[in-house]
Length: 67
Image 1 (spheres, rainbow, N blue to C red):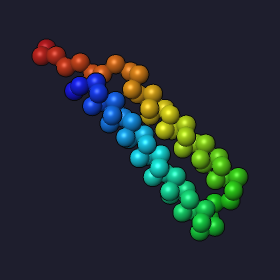
Image 2: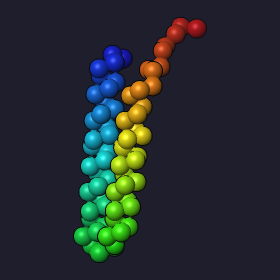
Image 3: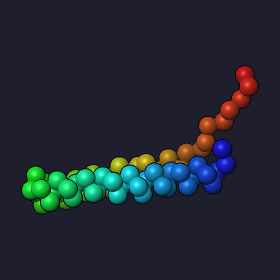
Image 4: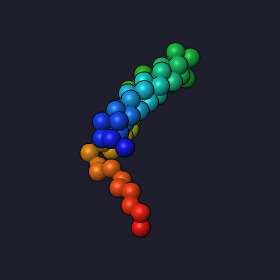
């Protein structure tokens, strides 16, 4: 797999995953199931998860061998 495709897929995964988790959190908050302080903590947790996922781009890709 080319490096550019790998990096693009990780970036898209991080961006879309973070937005999806944020939308779910906003839904809970809009329904009154998530107080503001818990929402702020949840958003910080989402940010950490997204950043950790994006850091996978710094790891070398898997090398495939025939043996």
